Length: 243
Image (tube, rainbow, N blue to C red; front, side, top):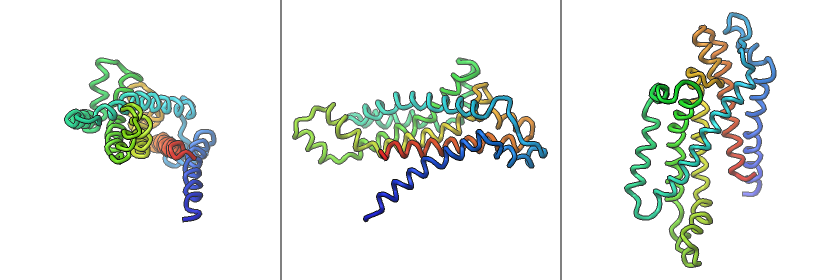
């Protein structure tokens, strides 16, 4: 229908811009601390480390983990969806699915004796949790490519590599990108637990607020983490749509 596509473009653009704008307001104005002051004994909650620095650290953890997830998950999805590898596909989905069946705190606790405190065990937890939607959506997207399209590509003389890079991956991108967005949003929330291990980030005010029984400080970290997740989701959606 005429006008529908431009409205969708405008909607995606607004969704991609409004959340980062609200995040910047929360980071660089006293609005949120003043809003949560009644829940913090009447005093605006504050953090030892500037909120913008905690946010950048949190973002670095999430994006670093997501890069590793993509380097593992996408090739794995491609490999197990090749003809004759149905058993491997089921095994891969089962193994990666274990990442979300084990509680996050248990994964981190098991990683600490080997990797110590700090960023390393947090990244392990983020990678395990982030793999599931990337692998499952990658498999679904690749299996959903129309067989007649692939037959036509074979008839044109395309090699297996050309069919994968020019046909399968582009056609499966919408489904695959949904998994990437889900993985990223999951990991913004999961990364907050890493503050308990000294990884820092927006989990720091949440952990400190819980230990001090300061609800305002807890909400400060939680709201900023939520705005960061929505910002990343909106920006990734705009990037994938190609607008």
